[in-house]
Amino acid sequence: MTARAADRARYDRATAHLDAPVAIVDLDAFDANADDLLRRAGGKPIRIASKSVRCRALLERALARDGFAGLMSFTLAESLWLARSGFEDVLLAYPSADRARYAELTADPKLAAAVTVMIDDPAQLDLIDAARDGGREVVRVCLELDTSLKLFGGRVRVGARRSPLHSPAQVADLARAVARRPGFEVVGIMAYEGHVAGVGDAVAGRPLRSRAVRLMQAAARRELAERRAAVVRAVRAVVPGLEFVNGGGTGSVQHTAAEEAVTEIAAGSGLYVPRLFDNYTSFRGRPAALFAQPVVRRPGVGVVTVLGGGYPASGAAGRDRLPVPYLPEGLRYDPQEGAGEVQTPLLGTPADDLLIGDKVWFRHAKAGELCERFDTLHLVEGDAVTATVPTYRGEGHAFL
Image 1 (tube, rainbow, N blue to C red):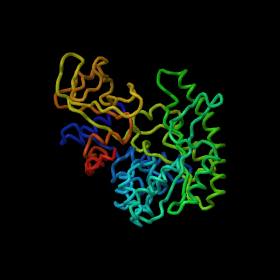
Image 2: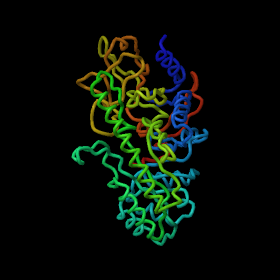
Image 3: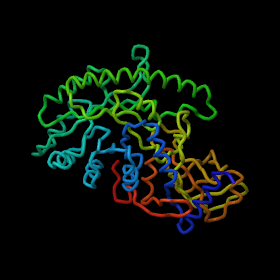
Image 4: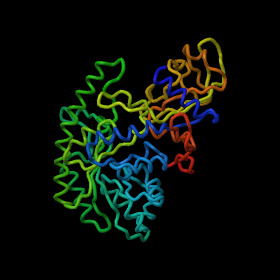
């Protein structure tokens, strides 16, 4: 029996009492992935990206391990909810225009102490001040650096379109603007190199593309390490008490941790290891988060149909954004139908061994987005479900 076949047998036994659709997290794999992230971080603390987990119980489980410290949230509403839930260090990774929540933040000393907001433009400070509604608490601010690699005089750009702040002088100028403004304090810098951390460099069947990605990433790492160090020096000249410099992501943990200027690493997807993280030369994780759909039809030889399963991930539309049939091995989508909202035909010889009611296990393309489809995650240890915990959705929250 292969390792994957053994996993399928375990998951089927563990969830035999549960009807599909059902989502699980294999805790042995989750914990092994956490250990691997810590190893790659080389002693620097890891701030957990909450959008990649979206389950308070599992955020707490990871934070209970030495080496994980703080959360990186994705909306201001989520940030305040997490702070009210007892998480004491929450960095909002994206600028917000949520005036109502800014009014709450600036009126509550506990929230203001726990939550750090992201800015890259003085206009965002204007919005926060206009939203205060009498709130006088000092707002903790993090400045975001654009990490994109610019080539040929800026005519070619590699990387996400995030912050407009690219040079050390630009970031330092914004730090001075914040320092001059009552009610705000610069406490951190963030720089997320998504073109390194979030792009696989070993795509199956694409050797030339994979080599090109590796060459690009090596150049991007060199350029960013030099520029990030210069940015930190420039900002520390304005804000000597800077508390943290955050960088990285699951795919670049060890590279970012090697930079002296970086004080903490961001990572989250590496705890679940969704399918988009299969294509890296620098690490191998264990799939920890899966979902199962039930077989509801057997249309013919080599074909079964499962209920639902059309859970595409965000990003540029493409086949790599679809969940992948994982267990039993050897199933694939019908190219004319793909993954459907209500039903999904699956092709392959393993289909002939599946009966009505059997489970087919899938891996989502991205990590936390799976939790937008399920109210609960069943936590599996060995061949048993040992706990069932709510996702954000199960607690009544959909923050975006």
